[in-house]
Image 1: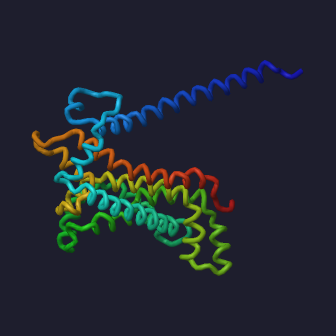
Image 2 (image 1 turned 90 degrees about the horizontal axis):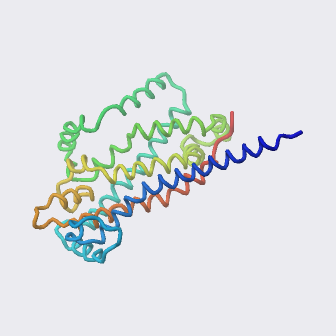
Image 3 (image 1 turned 30 degrees about the vertical axis):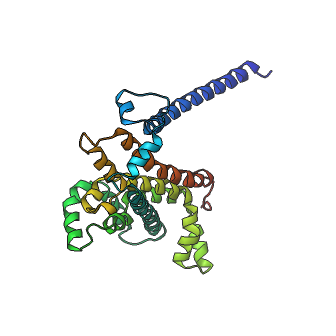
Length: 287
């Protein structure tokens, strides 16, 4: 006779585990989103209200803070445009050329293949601060200081992005698919752009988000390179706004500017997240 009790117990166990999973996910979502709520609430409050403590109820000083921010000493709008240009170009160049490098290691066999892979991973271990002095001296000699070139061009060589792309390509892009395209007469660049690159959309979307956010939040390198106020990015302007003297310091403006600087990151995530979810089923032909 079939054991109905064991089946019932198994069904209850699955249901209980599902309930626990939903409770944990709701808790984690709350912990992640509550700080955004606090940020946007504080952006609606004045400096005097902020000094009195936190309040979960929005205030009415959002447009006042925004107006003071726009008409203040910091070029906020130009800083936003600068950050969009630097972060957007960095995300595009990093993902495209890192995917191309991973494709070269994945699809070709040559003598130094294993060494090149190891060498690129070794570069991941070098902190940016170690090479900062030599980097500044180099851009001074090249006369490209106070421009966006030192912020954008080095992102082409991104070892972390390359490693992620290589690992994803090993499990997604079949070598038999590449060989079939070669037999059909397709060139290597066409194979990469029309076959390999589209198959990598989920990984590209993830790394584009990470690279965009990293470049958007980068303060150290832009602070070394950029001197003109009109060319500075938002992290530098936020730091300058926070370092204002006591008489001019307005915490409401600081929160308003931080909230303003987060919006493009949210937009980029919303635009690329559909590729992460919708592209999970993409894959090459199995060997």
